[in-house]
Image 1: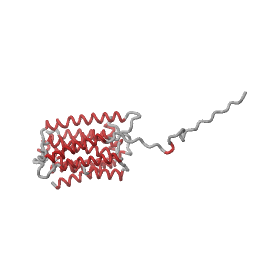
Image 2: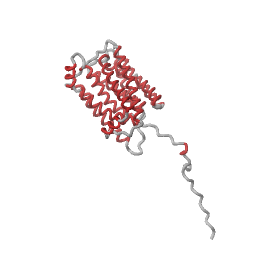
Image 3: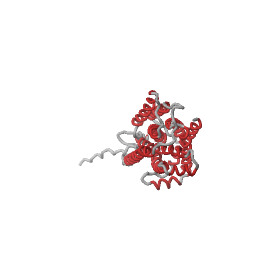
Image 4: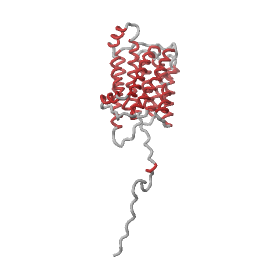
Length: 320
């Protein structure tokens, strides 16, 4: 149990550092678009700083494999969400991003909701499952992938329209969060396939399951979609939203798909269900658009703009 908690904390640190380093690198790169995935990969591969961030995220995925072998899905998600605190501190110190008052209240609500979910877990009562029926996993994952891609395309089409109010990134975060939720379930399934057998048997068992193919799709699609969105939006907003969707999706549907039973205590069930409902409500209440930029000092409203020539008075007509 405790080495799983330690691995989760290491994963938190790696994820937070990785996202902040990638966001810093994206600021100096050309504009990216998910419509041109090969160009996105080519541009990202030319940035050494971005590669450092990507390696940190990859190491976080490796730590996540260890976590799912030691902790129940719901407990793991509750620890993962604690990494949001480190992410917000790093984004403020390194990127200079400041959340609005409404967003800070919303993020507090998200943390409360996910703490309610993890508070419903009791050590010794939850069983750590290692496998799930493939049909059930695909039944959960395929609609989530379709919904995530559809939502991303919809948000992208709206964001590229002229004279559109700048998006805050909520839609992007939800879309990418669905993909990463599927990835999290695939990591959970992969961790179960890597135990109790030799390397060759484990590899054959893994390749005969849908998990590596789900990981491949979510890795490639998530890379292109998340980096284009992260370049446009604040990391301090889009990453917490993405993390919330991923954690709620994994804790609720992953628990059901992998047969990790719900608590018998009605209070614990209420905490888990109530926390999920609160997290979703907070997401719906968060602002969809960033506030418009303030006008510069030399463009104050008035009868005449300060940088525009004032009209000349009418020339008096000479008497005839």
